[in-house]
Amino acid sequence: MTVMQDVLERVWSDEALRNNLFNNPKQVLAEVGVKLPDSVTVQVHENTSSLVNYILPDPSEIPEGTDLEKADPVAGKVIKQALSDETFKASLLLNPKQAIATSTGVKLPDDLDVRVYEDTSTVKHLVLPTNPADDELNDLELEVIAGGVSKSGQAGIGCGIGSTLSFIPVIGPIAAATAGAASGIAAATLEGK
Figure 1 (spheres, rainbow, N blue to C red):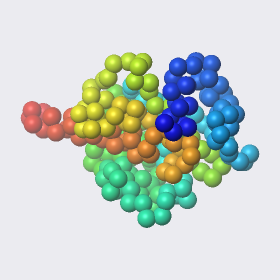
Figure 2 (cartoon, rainbow, N blue to C red):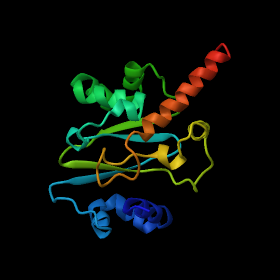
Figure 3 (cartoon, rainbow, N blue to C red):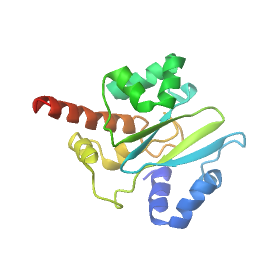
């Protein structure tokens, strides 16, 4: 188990630690050995069954040679477009669902709230995935699992590709949401809706 996975397990089971992570993220991270420069601030966001937080990585944190679209065609396309097109990035940060639909043609479920944050050299975002023990799987999560992605894997995002703060892979939320949306679109098409 990785250090961050261990922290995640502890945060899910210890309300005081969870609250402290939201109030003093750098202190909690330092206590588990993740030290950040004084110039860096950390913002913590939490996913729920109806809210997915997504972090647009700092381009300098993407390992050279990484093919984002190979890892996930839809999310990779969104990331690449945002990193190369300032107008699209602004749209993605302001209205993520519309920007994702415009870029990929995939309409995300109406009941899914998507928020996108941008990592920079001085601001890192950490997203707590939903705790699988807290609730039953919703339809989107069932569709994602059927597609081979774990609930915790689809539920959250870390601080960018290659970042030491990541709880889980960077592409998870959009990939999961688009997988669910694509399944819904396919089902609607098959049903003639």
